[in-house]
Image (spheres, rainbow, N blue to C red):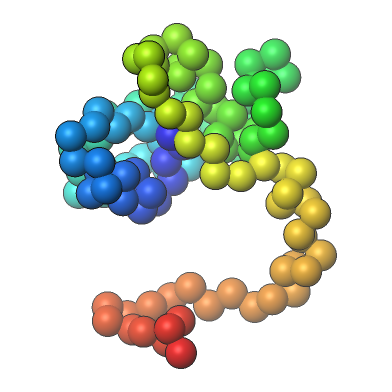
Length: 117
């Protein structure tokens, strides 16, 4: 799976404790406390650089995120492995006008529950 902040890869480790979880860091360098027991590889491409057309998965994905994992998945995944695709450029673009002017305030203090209100 593609990994950015590590939230999803840690959640999968909790959900499937006996599973070999692997990911590719596509956005930044991960620290050991963010990785858990997963096996992580860094992407060779800079975050904003898209994957070449011939190396993309055969389904909609995000060309500078999920698509960076496809080639390694095809080469290294064990039979029965699951490819996690979290988005697609087409869906992002179709929703962009609805969210482009929404102010973002992602700063949170520990224990802040304002998003639950």
